[in-house]
Image (cartoon, rainbow, N blue to C red; front, top):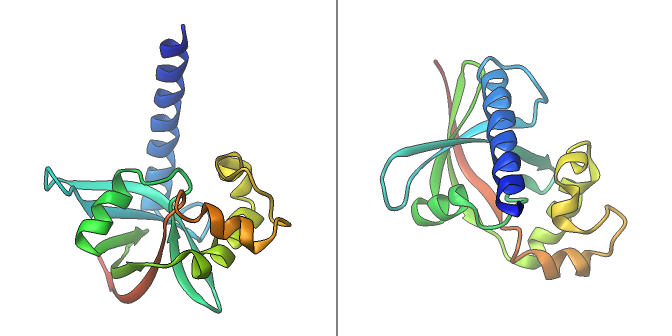
Length: 153
């Protein structure tokens, strides 16, 4: 019974990701949402998933709300990826940040509207102290975009 529920939930998430990906591909949806494409670290195939960027005075960041999932492993291997939104592609180079630097980014991540979707994965609220976010940084990797080039397609 538990496997059936898990399969149904996984199918629902795949469907949601497909709908969001289609919208973002046409430039629709929240402006922070982009399509991240990485090269598979074992297969070499290109993998695309919708992600939300955190942009602020401290820089631009990718956050993995569900832990070290596939795109995190891929980007750790390569250190580069592409972000796409509408007719624009951005070639990016990233580096993983340490927990002290990741803590304010994680707090920003759970403070917006996206908290409705990913808030339960963190188990923290936006009012939680930075030390709690720093303690959870290893479970939610944060990557800083250190270099980017944008091209129109």
